[in-house]
Length: 356
Length: 183
Image 1 (cartoon, rainbow over the protein chains, first blue to last red):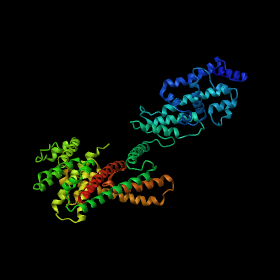
Image 2: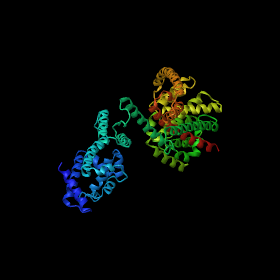
Image 3: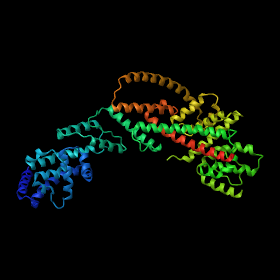
Image 4: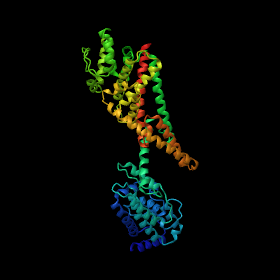
């Protein structure tokens, strides 16, 4: 490759000149090569790579597999992006001193000392090429695969590619975890096979089922108070069980209380409501308030009849005018109007109270 | 968000209907009888408010309609919705499924006993064991829970919790109102 000797020359020149002095031509060449490498993948996967670049370098590093070449790319790319306009490759300053250069690139203590001594430029460019090429593969595969029907093949291909590139590097599961999380956010239920785990249909289906269960557990956590902070399925289930048991016990207790208060099972609702019309209106049963007024207005003669009837009709909304006290709407008709005219009921109840 | 107010009102209406029906049959009831009747009608009202969409409501109603004594209450509450044929049909199928489930459960228990001897002390298996225990408890709590798989169980729990809350709210307001009225 032409550029390689060119870069080696630039390197040697730099080492010779020993300083931040970089001729524009040489830096241009080097940066051009990098640009070519970077821009080519970006045209293919514009979103993926630029998305990667937007991430802060440590995250970007983590997303890609933890490998030295990856780190080189991740660390160097932001630098290149920053200095695109000026065509100054900041790491050039470090090129003079091998130690400094690698510290700039990797940003942390690295074990790539052996690379220093080999023809650095070649290695660097080769690494860059390799890394950049495998990078789009990484980013591409880490993106949600909406259009990919065959997850199994993909994972196998990806694993092969990774094996070629990585060699003896450490395998991290963070990238795969992120990709599987990304897949979850989509409406399309795409399950990513985890690295090192089986890819057959059974485990995939089970994983999908498990994710469904986890999603529903989240709803339950929101519903039951105090479950948000708890982590762990068993403890959350404990809380849910406690909550259900307490609710059931409350129902029992309240029914006992109601039985104790009232001598008859169909409560003396009229006496209840006349005294408590205000509080009941607040508690979402405004309809019951209205009929409470009528028996008192009409007198006690018809009370028995009314009691039964308006116990059923109680929840109907008036549509009643004030005058219409004898026309009880049948339950079926009134059910439809109930929800809609809740507001009118409260107004009418207020007016009635004023009258009384 | 569920429209709580409409749910509450529907529940209250049906509950009162059921209570009326109870009071027609027996004139003087002891306090325990009353409590039972109150709770019973409340449960049926709550279950019928779901209109047969959820499993727990259906099993509640079918359980209630199995006993012959209070079946008229169930009919009263459900009568307007013509839910009765569905309820009747469910009873025989549930008996068959109950038998199947009992057989399955006995097989599972046998298998589980065998597995317990060689249970690994790996943390994941311990966690699974704990979760499984709690899931069984939850199944026993929710009406008709034994016949559900895990996903359905969690959905039914969600629904059941909201209905229970509605029930508790309505009963509490009624109780407080009647207590204040009697003073």
